Length: 533
Image (cartoon, rainbow, N blue to C red; front, side, top):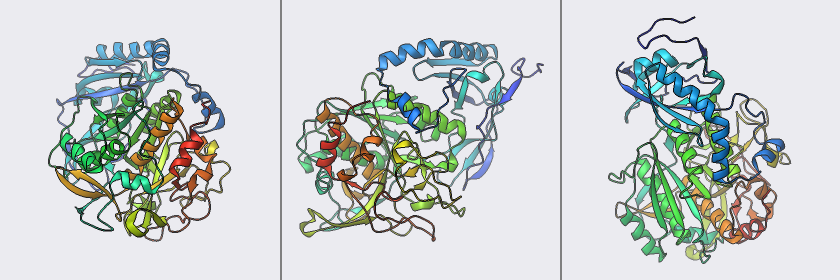
């Protein structure tokens, strides 16, 4: 039965399962969104009968590990998703919404309407909040979907703009001695990561949520390290661009770190930076675009952003999982930082939390260590879990995902939340502590940066070197890494506890540093001959 409304006749609607959003924590309600404000959202479409697999299971990975080219995937999507997109186009037009870009490869349809229209058609309750740093739009409650498109709708993204948190901390200007920071090339040398490989054939991606960078900063950092420059390409996502301010924002510090670590270790390579807005929905959109980019074709993508699993609803993480599943099929290695606020992810709800997307079975999660340097700062005398009180490596047991096949033989600890065993985070680790820290250049000033967001591009560069040695992308490499424990140095001391909650290091894999830190040359040697399924 239809009912009258300002937008016309609204068809019967059904709840979009898993779309519930709660009010943002730590933010003050300012008021409702103006009814006539224009809102652009993206509908992620799916086939009516979706594949049913357990994420990370042997059957799931066997399905996804069958490689496909971007061109073949595009042709497949045009066959399998055109009808669903057409249905959404027809519905949107009938209800007076403006239809924007339709991308069958990404499986997306953009639609625009007023906040009033969106509330009537999708049941979207949109409000303005202030968290003390910025004002933003957030959606609360569940969405409803017109019945005629419900079977083909995976998620509706773009209503919610609550900001994401990167892993970042900025120290004072670098000076001399321990604690003054090591250049990325010096840090790489500590792990035996070679700096003389020809990596000109590889392309690497960085996802940046807000902010920008200065080309002059990159030039200065590379000059200080005596390294040749890569080719850097800025890629806009939904109209966002390189927007550098004064270098003091978290986003700008993050981009500088990610870019300078990758650029220093990968001379003459291509680095594509995907600039998106600062929200979970924007992160999903950026990863979709980066994975499917048929121009720059990144083989490895480094992401220093994420948030506790509890902040992701079902439709949000399913949308992300869809993008990461495409990455596996296209042989794109996806790396995510595991977070810098220890086992609780900085929350005070009496539980421990791991970061998503680092907890996805389709991702490589990167944790952090605290290395103690030897004489001359050219070697590591000892190394422990990174834990500096209220800052330190994230890690633990996922609340969302079962144990993936590549972790089935591990003695995974039980979740401190419910006693169950599921996906363990992180997979690997690298230096992340404030001492010695990573020396970089931000706004013409040398600073020292730390965090799992430093370990993540370090690992991304190492995997790019693997691809160069192989002559082809290795793609999803978790199984290969877990099959080569001898290519790692275990981290056996320390913990990521805070307020008495967390996990301990120990022999073998642990929920602080995963398999451990890389023996750079051994990683390359082991993975350069690993066959692709």
